[in-house]
Amino acid sequence: MSSALRALRAALRVYAVGVAVVMTQLLRRLRGGLRPPDLPPQPGRVAIVTGATEGIGRSTARQLARLGMRVIVAGNQEARGRKVVDSIRAEYGRDSAHFLFLDLASLSSVCDFVREFSALGLPLHVLVNNAGVMLEPRGETQDGFERHVGVNYLGHFLLTLLLLPALRSAGSWGRGSRVVTVASATHYVGEVDVRDLGGSGPAYSPHAAYAGSKLALVLFSLRLQLILDARGDPVTANIADPGVVDTALYRHAWWGTRAVKWALGWLLFKTPDEGAWTSVYAAVEPKLEGVGGRYLLDEAEAQPLAAARDPELQRALWAESCRLTGVDEDGGGSLSCHRGSPVRPP
Image 1: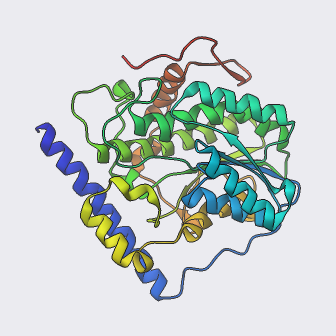
Image 2: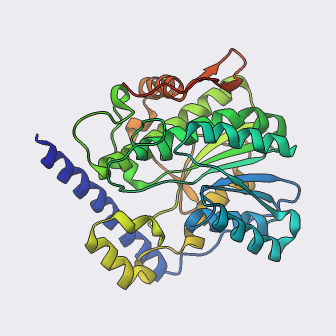
């Protein structure tokens, strides 16, 4: 199959998934099924939300703050991030939100973020891996990775592993810490080539790259839960699928999709607040205490792609991700950034 046909196939598959999801959302809306979950207060707990300067991430941060959590707004747009923090503080108090700079397209920025968070002396009870890019033209991160893989997946992979000690320390039996990773229904049509995770191949499709990065996040989260269980850590890892949400991520989508979003987004798409409900549910729902390895959609459990449960693919992806991000894992599971540069894709 030629590169052009592969790219067309990937685009059609991604848009077919999108149509199926918006039709499901429309039926649910017409039946009155879009209602916010009823969740208990969370005083004294601390959360980090990546990509919290806009869209679903901003709504997630606000909803967690409304429940009484102290929220770290993590993002690569400082001016916008500080406005979000000011807005949250105006409603929920001075200690309800803080901004820390995080550029997931730079592994060194991820390391700097973890050091800056550690310097705050706060516990960490919830990490929401929300930030992402979608359908961008081919480009590379600062470390030479294809941007969908680098920003959506590898940046969050490194961030999560570096924050695991803080999550372990804050967790306890009966009140564990939680990792919530935001995926997408496009993972059902995604493919992961562990031999070319960095995206160095000559053929490129932004649709395939986006779907593949979301599948990688699902594989990672399920593998992480297996490791947490084996160690007996008081931490769980779950996946949140927000659905199709009216955000700025569609700036690179096909013009027809953008036209539908402009004309009918109010009916077919979820609002950012509605899209954040599943992430917030995964972060605080009491029924999920001690429960990990779940794929959650519309605040309920769903089934991920069967291939995402392939233990061999999970292990291979994990090993290659450690190599590419330049982290070491010792017997106790502690991790640290190398002083040198991360491994560049071959």
